[in-house]
View 1 (cartoon, helix red, strand yellow):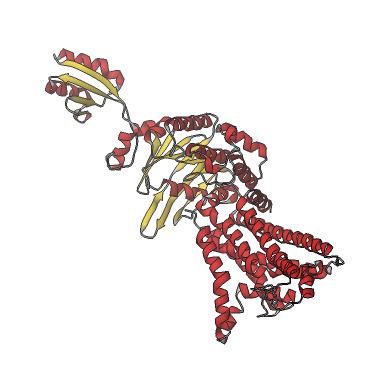
View 2 (tube, each protein chain N blue to C red):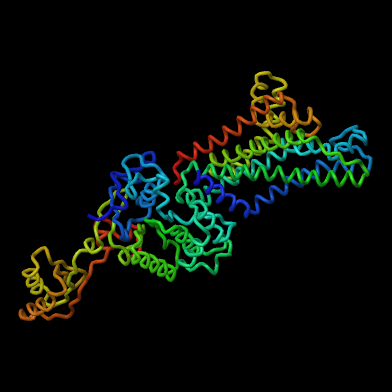
Length: 306
Length: 281
């Protein structure tokens, strides 16, 4: 039994008529990078705010590190960057962090440590208001890491970053995870979650649709085959994978629910029935496909980037 | 207690590096210098009648510039501009935290909300004390310089008078600062808080007091308002209205002191209660 860092039970937040978060029950285990995935407005940030005690749930409860969320002794052990970095614009980066370090009763040396970690030490003397969006986000992450918290909550940390900034941020999270840091990372970017998260909670319209590992969510790999004549190919493949295991994709490709290791046997069978095999590829289902399947939407309807 | 002290230290660090705070404190000093000394001294030297000192004799003017008059000078300006400036400080300290998202960041650092907001209130109190101390130092320096220049003997005020004036002035500023803090918390931003606060303290109360002269029902309300209380407390120190706008004798000094102290406690307490319960979305 793994130690649970976060456990929510029927967490609900209602604003007037609108249910922002609807009975979310999720768990985060120690040492994992938990991806909190959903389109903009799905309820990710609201859920995280309740976890940090910034807002009160309408119903349900959240417990963090074994205690009710929002207690000062719990909040002291969480580092968070929620919905963009909130700092004093007139102070420089270092003084902003020193202010927050004083709130925690930490020495100034701790500020220098986290500034190094996010690669901001040489710009620490510049005023926060002059920072680029990427630098502001990095300062926010540095602030979250003050005092080496047990749990790091990063709400869309790559929002507004350029591709290089995104890559740096991901590398930082991966490095933290390798050091055993428990991280909750919310994102609407599926590729990001797929790349760095161990487990994923998918949320849409306030509801937690599914919680599982990335691999489980994506499901097994499939084979894509282009072969003529198609009728014969279809018959052969259906015999191997079952009637439900074969789908037509696009104009002339067939998708078969068989693992990559079955490719030689599939080709052998097709050839033995005089079918011309033009192309065989192993197609891995992306998280995006899984996500759209779950939410029942298409990418044009959702603000999702793969 | 540790969390409260940590929060106070943190808040003081970020406030003393905030140029807006120094501009406001500087403006307060400049106004005290102008209305307390410069205009009166120019009037004394040129023999013209000063606008605020209609018909005052030369000797009276000079007496008001001497070190012995420091207790009157440091408090006379507080009901008008001192209070307004303190209110702006309070509104800026509390209100900006919402737009900048810094309350959110602070509340995820560990100290309880009561400790964090209490630390902010304590830091504002330290600022108010610094404002008052700066005024005292300025007035002492300027009045001693004038006395020396004019060849007068330098007679310092009685310490108890000075302490009473300093304490009363501190309370009046603290009241306005914490009211500004509370309005900043309620308005969730500095702009509305500063605007409404200034219109209230500079315009509305004066208008109400004008109406109160005609209707006794209104008067009982205006007697309980912060401007009346602060002005009357200053009036009690200087010995009645001395021609400075805002210095009043509407209520007794004792009642004024109690009213001001009550506003300090209620404003600070209300800010704590509101922030403790509030959703920071």
